[in-house]
Amino acid sequence: MVELRPATEADAEAMGRVWASAWRDGHLGLVPEELAEVRTPESFLERAAARVADTTVADVDGVLAGFFMVDRDEVEQVFVDAPHRGTGVAAALLAEAERRVAAAGHPAAWLAVVDGNARARRFYEKAGWHDAGPFDYAARDGARTIPVPCRRYVKDVSGGAAIPR
Image (cartoon, rainbow, N blue to C red; front, top):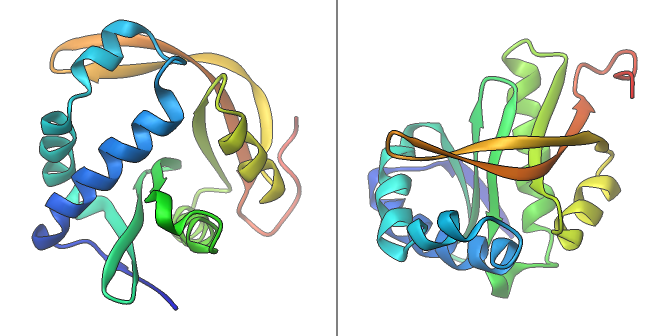
């Protein structure tokens, strides 16, 4: 059974490990090499610790199986540890992220998917998200910004009219 809860500081290390592994699975070979070089295991541990306050984690039998972060209307960093993929963890996380965006008063949610990440794109499309087109996501490494070719996915979370394509 999946239990969703707010992350705590005690989760930061497990979040960093899941994030590093899942990010590499979905991004290596698809993002600029300069970004891949700076996304070290240590960088994910640091980034996870800095984002605990806006993170929701999924526990399965006491093990951190995945997480997401929300920044206003953007659903960020939806990642699931490999042993838990295909088990419903990602769907539970995404549904909660959508609920959070709606509860904050935003009519639509959006997220970025690396252009070549076909697995993630299929997952989001199956969950009712649609591809709103290409854009460069501004990945940050300290003060430096690295543009990453992505697809912008959007979903109406208001329960009202559909978001125009």
